[in-house]
Image (tube, rainbow, N blue to C red; front, side):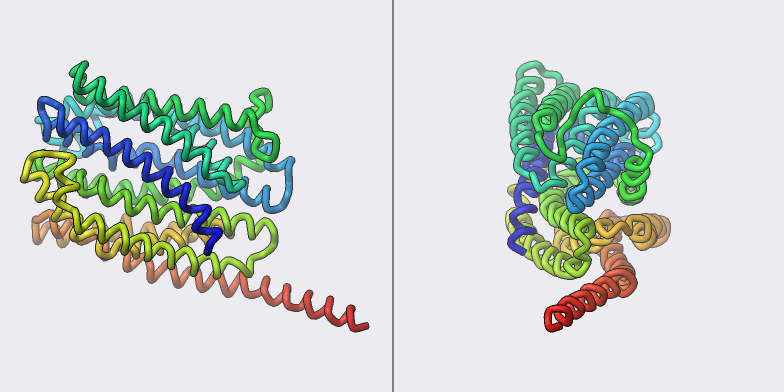
Length: 453
């Protein structure tokens, strides 16, 4: 558990810092824009759509992390080298593709999501500028995943800190002084993203061991590509399932007007601090599981799952309690509109009390992914997150047309998902881990008998 905490803490701080600087975008635009709540709604309501477009590429970076972790665990320097260069070239290709799709189709997506006409033009402008930074965003995530695979979570934290401070400073300059409104927030974001990717690439160029990057060796290697896709694509698709359901929910929230849009996104932004801390633990579980599988120590997976789940519950209770205790003051940082603040608080009281269920599900998925079971966890997640929430929207929400009913779909889907993913893990444990443990015991017995002879 001590090693899991030591690995997770810098990772959690990296994510929290990133969220702080993203929240700075919302705080600055909500407090200092001349059209406060409208601009806040235009910027913040795009999160589900951005996730839908970019999540497949980000999911692939987790595949790179697992493949790299296994290569390091097996001490296979040649495979590690091929993984580094395949990953970075794949990241560049994915980033450019995401940028083109996002920038060209931004307005069509927003119209489809029933975005309030009052904020449509602002939201379109923000999205088009934001997606120019997609190549930097994707390549950074792949580069950071490679460093984390060898246990280095500190440098990605430092790079995010540098980029985040720059982002926050540029927000103030572009919004308050240059009066660029949503365009200023988007420009600050993409500039900071390109700074962070330059820093992570420099770090990989200076590496001496497994993670060293040599530009002339950039190439797509078939075996490593297939392994990355096999592990990472299901994760990306799984994240997109979440985003598809969230986009549909966001579309229905948009129908209540821009004040609920702003309040919903404010609550979601605050909740994400808790989720990011829990997600750091699940990422640690993935890396630990991957390295132990590479080292033929499958018997440690149960301990990784148990310890990571204990940490997740502690994080959820402590951070969730603080956010709920100070819910109204925290929401008021984003907007001075009392209606927006009330909507944000209402959402958080539905989501946060059972948030630990979501984190525990991620730990199960992380351990399964580290054991090379990346496709099978998609099934329960698809059924409980995507299908269930969509059915909920078109049944329960149609009967009781309130935001509360929409939000209620989240904790119920987590509970259902936990039941199914736990059953899947037990099946995999009996199939893969127990035979491995039995074999290790047999080997120990054989060694003991030889010693006696």
